[in-house]
Image 1 (cartoon, rainbow, N blue to C red):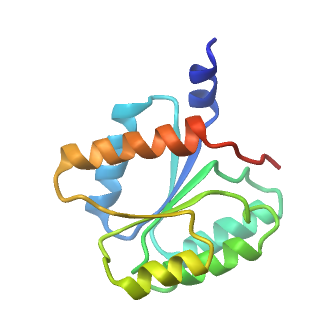
Image 2 (image 1 turned 60 degrees about the horizontal axis):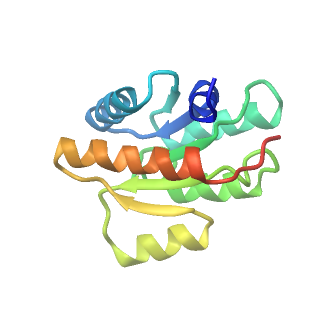
Length: 148
C-alpha cells in the first residue's frame, strides 16, 4: 500500500453545513476524489458542538479535517470555532471555512478565532470539485497533523 492509499483509508472529514444542496454537492465532490473517505455531517452548530463533546469524552474519534459554513441556525460557525479551539482534542484539527460569505468582517473574525483557511464556495460544480481536490491535496496529503 502506498502512502497516498494509506491516508485515504484513514481520512475522516467532518462537514458542518445546514444547506442540503451544499451537503449533497460536497459529498459528491469528495466521492469523486476519494472513495475511502468518510464524511460525517452536522446540519447546524449545535450538532457540531455535541460532536465535539463526544470527541472530548472519547466516544468518537475526532476527524482529520473540518469543513464548516458560518451562517447556520441554532449556533453559527464562529461559536463552533470558539468551542473547537478551546477543546484539547480538537484544537489542532484543521478547520476550513467553506462559505458563500465574502464579508471582510467574517473573514477577519474566522481567522481570529482559529480558522486555518477561508474559502468561498464556487457556484459552478466543476470548480467546486476542483476546490475539494485542492483541499484534499493540501489538508490531507501534504499538511502534517497531530493525532491524539
